[in-house]
Length: 182
Image 1 (cartoon, one colour):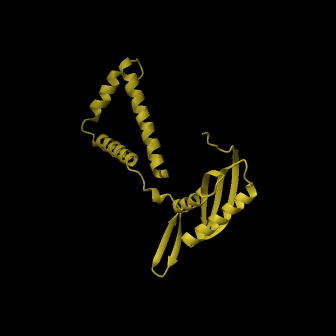
Image 2: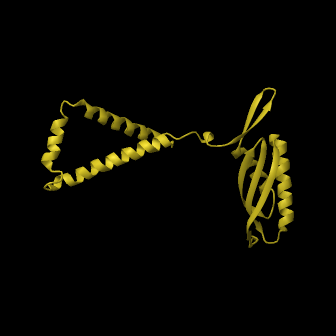
Image 3: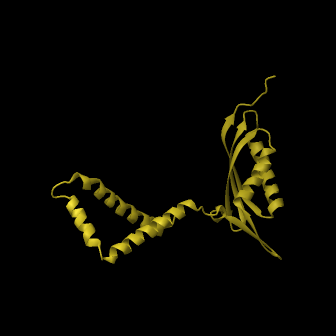
């Protein structure tokens, strides 16, 4: 939501809160504070004054705008960053999700590593990756991480044509090996 929309929503909410408070206390017929007669007098003074109609129209339009902005979703691709590759025919856009899928494809071929979470950073045509996962307790972590880095680098460069920068592997947890009971 843009800052303009947030400001309008805040003003709109404050106005509705004030109107709601007035509607709540009006039936109690409190002396000296907004009485029913005051409310009726205000409503009578509204007749013939078209400024109130204009205010009501603005509130109605703002309400409709917020209803439709809540229903319609932004296109998912608008929020994603992408890598632009150029060739003689034009541009090729490679989104973060594509690179994450390629990393998951490579990681699934490694035994002993699970639950890989990938963060992609695209800077100046380079792909920097941060991989966070879990390994089995019997695996040599430095060797596995090196093989994973090498496999991911080769796969991304061969599939996308993009150069890979730093590939950081973080092992957050060592899991017990899974064995099958027969």
